[in-house]
Image 1 (cartoon, rainbow over the protein chains, first blue to last red):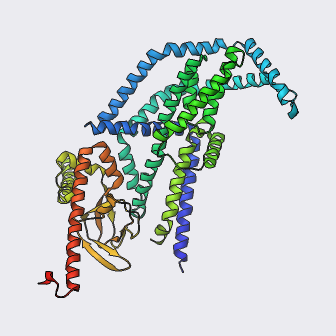
Image 2: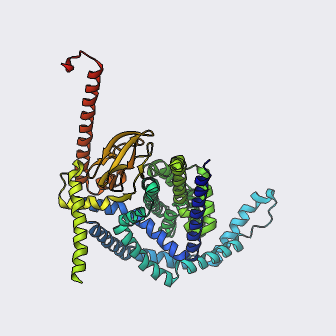
Image 3: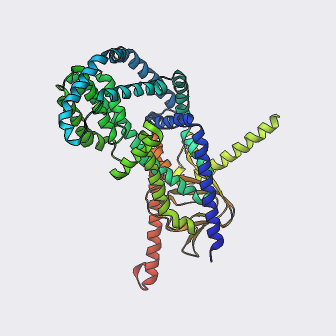
Length: 347
Length: 171
């Protein structure tokens, strides 16, 4: 009979679950700090290979971290000086360009064009204009609440670099410190999990980041060639949106289509925009992704889709962005945990 | 007050020196200079085991090697077949730095002991960050495994000679 062993295992599992629930409940009270830490961890993860590269050239970790920060400040300054006029022109153009009367006219014309094709579905009125106005208003409200909140920008601008700096410089010591708390029995297994997570999730994140930059650049170039207004802003959006599987690329294309229709008041550029996004998507899938996201988290497309939907429902855009790496993390932990469960149970 | 600090630093220095001495006895780290040794020390994990505690189990995923700082360790195969008894300054499990095969035997602390462990993820990371030092370690590791192979071949030769009476090597 192994009842004492089983009850002790059961007690351990219950205690671990209570501890996990306690930590999750605590984190739920400080969502903003959690968001800052998650973003910082992601940035530190992305910058880690760069720090390793500088270290391999003979620098200490601290010097390598300082060099990376100097480079980032330099790069951001150059980008700020070089791209700000273009960025500002496009932002002000965006504010002026959407003439409500003209937009209303275009949308009404588009609705008239669509209605004969939709009548067989029993749809009598689409009210596209009303829906667009509501969507624009809520989007504006979201931007003001989330992006242009001055206090949160200042806090993020100070805290994120601060956290990233120390994660990059002392990340290994943090990991070693954490591992030193793990009991002997699970010590090597914990390190093995870290190793697996680092290999799968880390490479996925870095790959996606590089992929987003490439897709963003291709989109900017393609829309500039086609002559779509605000090509720079849409390119940035498309690059960032590309981080979200399935939905991201469609969101980028839809935005470009809306802008092109509102800009010309006709469907003349629609074909070229769709063609450009199709080519970019094909290039991304056939050339970019296999090279930069080669060792990604191997997951079934349905799992990815559900993960993105649940992540989006629970935590918004950040949830959609993080859903795949988080599910990859859980997959590795569960997979390796089950593989090793019997061994650790009988130990 | 100064004496307290002196003692604290003396203690730390002595521990560091002890670890340096132990590491320099291990063939894998023998040819490292002070700077390189410090780099290695930063990635080693120090663990303490009580008497009869298992350091790892037979069949576990092997992740790296263990160096005994203090105490005695038994390498055990199956329920009770003792393959080796090791003491302070010895090391074991180094093959796991190179392959992904499960542990072929268990390691059990015979007395309370302290170990330093050096794992594959850290070795790979080191190869990335300091290829020169990583290569030095890999080269010495290959040498150690080569020596073990030679020794195993020798043992096999002796055993096969014992099994074949009248063979030339017995003369």
